Image (cartoon, rainbow, N blue to C red; front, side):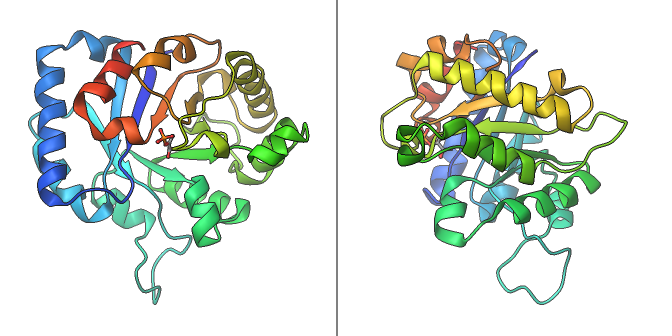
Length: 251
Ligand code: PEP
């Protein structure tokens, strides 16, 4: 399966930085197109700058883009929110859901993630559903149980036909900390996620399962070659063209 390398830019930068970063990524990939044979590339700028990214990508549509979250409501009086149909209007291919920072700071629940995923599928947008345990949950030996419960409640009901969804396994304690999960723990978790998906969706073997959490050029090759790791969700290292593409090069 072709790997997906996704850059979550979070709430960083400003318009100038976003324009510079996306132009650099385009120029570098244009010069080294073989990366695109092995990896699909997607970027997730702050929503306000989606149109800047979209504008730059008109000339280089092989890079996809998306939002970092959407509302659980379809429309109406929800000040500050952006709907799934607006994400479709903005030509998003993907939307990240249930990121641990949304769960921690914005009260995101598994139930909301599921609702949002259903709204996105109705718009033909691929949800990237994030799951992952905290450090204490792992220390107590509960990592598989926690992730299993998250998947149970987050994955939208999909019957009969295959619909594109992506799952990102992001151990909370590895995000932005410089710590990464052990390769064997990643292998076990990704295998477990694949098996869980088999109970939930048709063609689970086609669902990409990304790893996220302090991925960087130095550890990307090892992580990306673990069985059932179908790409990476990259935070900090996606904010620099050379580190982002050095990771993609290992796909
Ligand atoms: C993330 O926020 O999804 C992430 C993986 O961040 P980082 O790569 O900085 O750990």
